[in-house]
Image 1: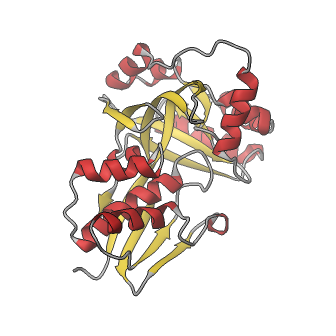
Image 2: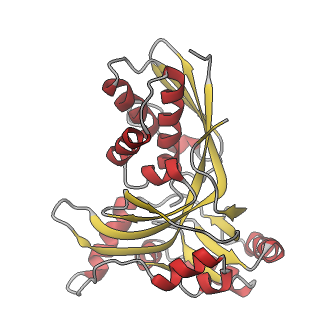
Image 3: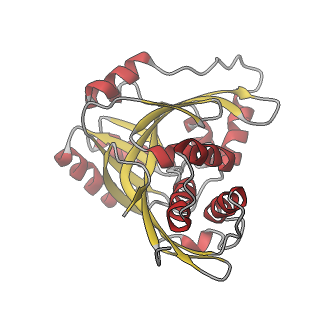
Length: 299
């Protein structure tokens, strides 16, 4: 057994998040077009006498360092399937915004799963790892896979998508987080009494991704949770406005928020949008990243 295994795992942005009405189980059917972006957490798994979680990076005071952490749950599920105890020290080196709508917790779960599989030499198949990912959460399978994919069901059933070029993004990190369940609850409140359509992927959006056409993609970006996120955090509107005024091709709340995403025409456009957002005083920090990015990778 190796002394330690480190896995790098990417953040995501939802270039389309179509949300259906609440199901009897409380989840929502989705048509969720994921795009992995080049902001990464690193998860290191090392042998230990028990299960231990440590973390470093901005915002780690807001994440649990016990058995409820998604990374810890990933290790526990994999160990149980292979008849062993989850004796591992998982160290999370965070660079994905915490509680920011960019799947940082899901990324850590996928990273921990691959790191423990490698460390313990369990020999789990890709299908088994994806099954465990789906058990952990709707965004976790995509964190393992990366690239671009359409997520259906509650987001966990993935169909890989072709991407024909690089897309340049700027992300504005807000102060504090937004609870994903709270945002979905607000979506339910805002859509109560209305006919919520069945979610479906936009053919024009998929074509823009496949062509690597940022201008075409910009006109198709949509997030059905954005009104709910803005309802709960009205201050995000000022951040979106600042990015649009700086020349972003499109603006978007990322997932359930509160991170906001800005699609730029290229590297220079991204730098201009980032500088304007930093100067605007409407967000805590600003990050530039390129997509697509690979999924969970052993370093």
